[in-house]
Length: 359
Image (tube, rainbow, N blue to C red; front, side):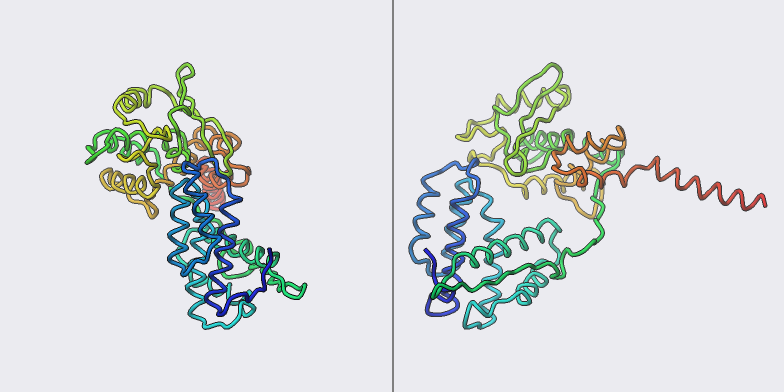
């Protein structure tokens, strides 16, 4: 069913109405492979068919869906909630007053300091929302078409230089692993050590390791085989030498409490751990190891694995396969750390100088 773009009595109610409809559509269309509580999701969708009184009420419903396992909804809702707060302050009297310039201002002022990936997610959420509006509004057989593009909003535009990822060199990594082995965590020490080691020894994303289930881990000769669910719910296989984690993994499995989702790693309530929690562990271990980096989060461990893998093997395709990159171009960033080639460039400068001195 389609509605006029200004379908409620005032702008605030109208904007909330459309965001609710968009969220409901996304809840019905996002992948539900991680869904743990279908009844909670059904109830959330049903509640969205009724009138939602304010953005906080909608926020609560979205959190219920996220906690039920539909975590992807946050990618869309968080930027739209920020947009809602900003547009309400504009005192607009019609949805038709929203234009590309206003949305560009929103993105410029609300994504400063965020990672490039998060900026892209904000842009994607805005584009998806207004594309939905283009198709779903109608009055007198006509639609109001926004045709939002956001090609040049002041965030990631053109051929902006790609930032080199933060990583540990081999000496720093050695100190970091020693800190992990020697540290006595306040609680769940074995679990936390294993999580960090799984990331650093495989290069998997934090979310991929936290999503591992016990059944996803098997033995094959001298390796553990991990069945990883990556971006877009695509599976891949990564290997880790058994000698690196076998004793700790066996002890962890013997002492860990069962959980309804069969997770390999979970909190005391049997729920999935958060990426923020793992990043705090990594930050603490870096301090203990005396390693200082501009970005101390757990994702830095993935960059470390990829960088050392390329330095040791000089095989960019191997890096792509190990990290699960869809495009080889994504993996090429790690060729910037090829010190052997850089030394060749330094040698040329030295040779040129020597030739000049001989003259």
